[in-house]
Length: 299
Image (cartoon, rainbow, N blue to C red; front, side, top):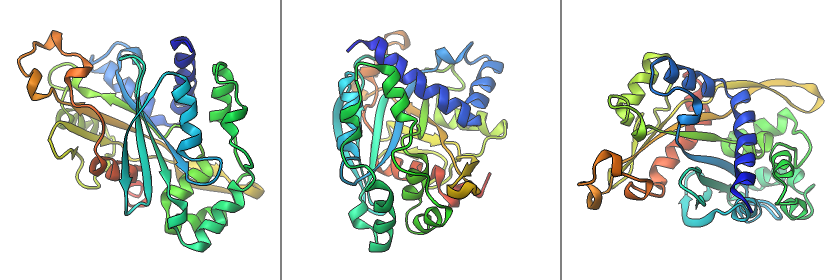
């Protein structure tokens, strides 16, 4: 598998994500106007994230086959008890590619009524759909990631899911749409290369930030700092042609500090391996809420 194929898959994801999430282009445009970058190509994408459902033939065990084939390595697991989620992150084949974070709803932990609604749709998937894709064909992968796995949900079912799990409702409609991409702020010019400074830059330009757990989410060791915009409400078409506004995707920002062992390195010597790696469950737990009503109501 060549990196060209991976580049094509990531390019397809970013094109559709940018079209669907106005904040993406707005953030890029503001960075260009301020002279932080000349073009989007200069942004280091820290990671991208996907949401899945833990049901037969789907979930992480199915989805990860795509990116393992494209050269990613499966890394540490994470668990989010309150949100009933499991997750893993995946390390990329080269430093120029983003990390990937894939979460999965523990459907069996939900109420019987909510499980029944989810299974009404996911039971339409009778075999692992990834097994039928040519994973050497980036166009086929791109089409799969943006195609329906089950019929369009009814608004009634969406709202019923949303009452117990906003994550479940998001996935039943959005499926494998890219949940977010992440700007690495530590590589930006001085004055904008910390989360605190970049958050100020964003808020001065009218962006609404997720304040669940504070606008800056900080790992226990203090070396991973994250923030995110609040998802914009988008017009969605449900079964029977019913229109209803639901949360779309959002943009995340990450600052990975240089580890103490490499503190003596000059700015030009610092590479990805010298910075804090991986993720932090406590940070991610609050970032998930960028699509939750407690945050989207603030836009």
